[in-house]
Length: 189
Image (tube, rainbow, N blue to C red; front, side, top):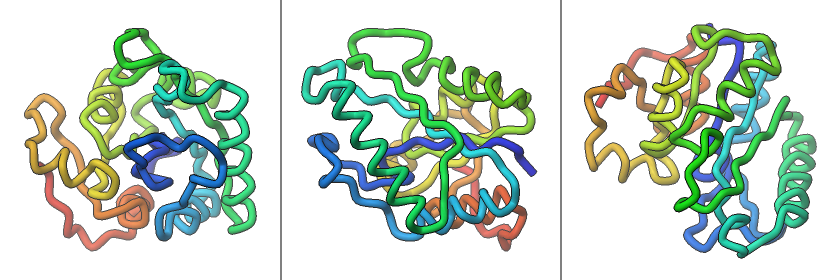
């Protein structure tokens, strides 16, 4: 079982909005997301969000607003008995490459370093190719969820070099896989 769960924020934990989450009032937790985190917490796993937030780099929101959004997210999770141990973000716009921004693996390596956990004890749960590519670059196990952009990502085809991976309907089923409580009904690619 993994000791560190790395999560994308948008489309995995919260609703993915095409126009970005611009303020705390626009943040909507996905069904069973908090309960899924609580399962990880109760199993003693560390949970870190590693998320690109290009709305900052595009000038749509500033770092202060992103901090308010994340404070709201943490408070919502706490009300449901769940917590994140770390929340990392890359604020750069998509046209500004950098090692932290996914598909780079910088945020994943930072989370592993902070907790002193090796890549073989980690799993990345995401909904996009960039999430899977970052996990591959960090040598971390991968789970694609079909929520958020996940269905479209799967339909477009997963490149062979990103295999093996698990595919889950949502964070709850991904938690089943991580915690070893699944019925083995998810296929790869």
